[in-house]
Image (tube, rainbow, N blue to C red; front, top):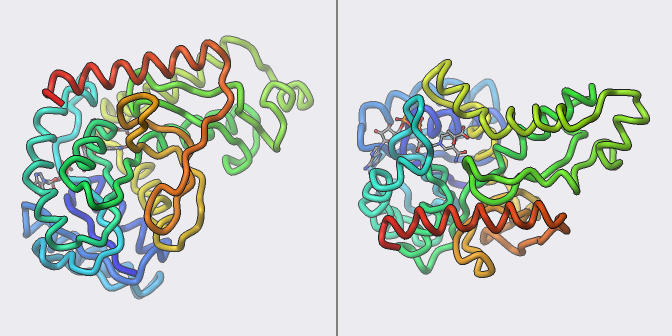
Length: 304
Ligand SMILES: NC(=O)C1=CN([C@@H]2O[C@H](COP(=O)(O)OP(=O)(O)OC[C@H]3O[C@@H](n4cnc5c(N)ncnc54)[C@H](O)[C@@H]3O)[C@@H](O)[C@H]2O)C=CC1
Ligand SMILES: CC(=O)C(=O)O
């Protein structure tokens, strides 16, 4: 099982490290415009292999991606404090126009896993540039993890027992689907009541703010986010490599909304196997429609 990572900055190298620690694949190849950086990251990460799962880690040029089943795309600019993800569109679209043809030439059989922001619009662009290949955007997998983490904190349980989906844009207009959120299989409000924990509009607003603005506050504090997305990318890649039929809120072209955005989707060999449409309240559906509109408008500025 071979995975390529293109872009070995904070996100790409952390995703590679997460894959080595989790034993997601047997071989990893790192590619970057900055070849010295890719080589140094590969060497450093390779030193974790003998004490984890023995993954073979190397760096190379695009040709070294040959035979990869998944190529993770993390090349491009990240946000500076105060910038939105959509502000990165023009710059990162230009980078994708340069790299995608090289990736498809080297690894025509790979599932392309996009993380670079704005991830939804770059998922759309990658689908156009590589029409023969399955494309998945990491979408709101990270935001759903943030939502679950905060819910679990308020519920005083470990994060694996809180479930909830963030839908739409991976960005400011994203939608927390409260109506289907559960803890221990119970609607979250019922769980909180049974445990005599506070649950009201203010707590929900706090969780919403914490989820929606997590990236901005982390970037303010340490320039970039990478641990959460690194683990999320490893998790998505495993869904494909092991044909796990994992349900994850990844981004993909969604004809009903006319743009790539996140909905819960079943992920397996070959990428997205199926898309789920959770029952939403009217307010949630309205917010999701608005989120799709935000993405379509931003794409229009690019002339797409
Ligand atoms: N989807 C998500 O949930 C998340 C996405 N991101 C996004 O991931 C992207 C990468 O972020 P960081 O790793 O923090 O940035 P970074 O600046 O640390 O790394 C970017 C890397 O891309 C490389 N690169 C630039 N142009 C290239 C080209 N033409 N060919 C090959 N490599 C090229 C650079 O040399 C650099 O190593 C950003 O767009 C960021 O916003 C970050 C966190 C979460
Ligand atoms: C940077 C980014 O997209 C995030 O951490 O959500």
